[in-house]
Length: 312
Image (cartoon, rainbow, N blue to C red; front, side, top):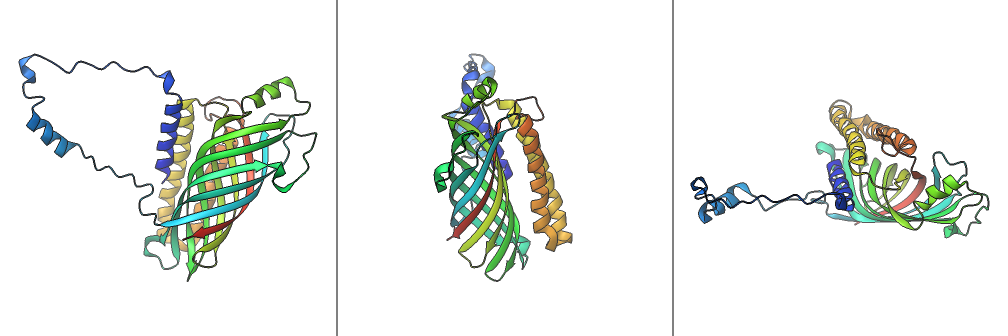
């Protein structure tokens, strides 16, 4: 499933930066020389289309996901920029995810399950969600995020119940509204102005655990880390996330062997290793957003969430 995120990521960033690319000239395909006779013959062209070009393309990122699912979350958001001297006030968050899930036996195992969930999500973070009083000595901000994501994991099955450690990845666009910024240095004010009232590209990773006592209802707890980029630098960002994808896929290869030899420890080890990879890259990008390339520190936030899950 990870390949779909990176394909969409590259596509989105290229679209957003397409003005930087010049249209290539199209060569003339018409040639009066004798050696092109039959090149555009109708019969040959029809045969080539039939044999060489398959129009029945399959986009299988949602294929086989026949269980609609909804998740509603409440959380505590803590935001910051790595090199800011002024701290941000705490924010309460609400999130809704809607999509399709798939829960199947893992390699025909009687007690391991393969869990996946592809979703659209809406996220709002604001101090006023639970009528908290904003501190006059901290930066007060609100967040609105729209995005796409997926999560997966290997879980334990016991009858109708399940326990599923999972990891989740998503990207989207976040609008940050700075409500107050008391006594900030000019350099920090300028940095915040890069985000204020603008939608910015955002990536997030999450680790959590789902407890499903009955078939259609579950509760979950998760810790999320998100990065909000002040601007898109296409190829360096793509290189950074491809490097992470390689690390995650190496974990997948390793886990295939673990499941074959020690299946009982696979769910915990799977989420632990993938969380370690994501945590490492998050910490590096928190300091330099284009890691392993040079870059400034982006706005980031960490969110601890409790959720109610419904699978139909």
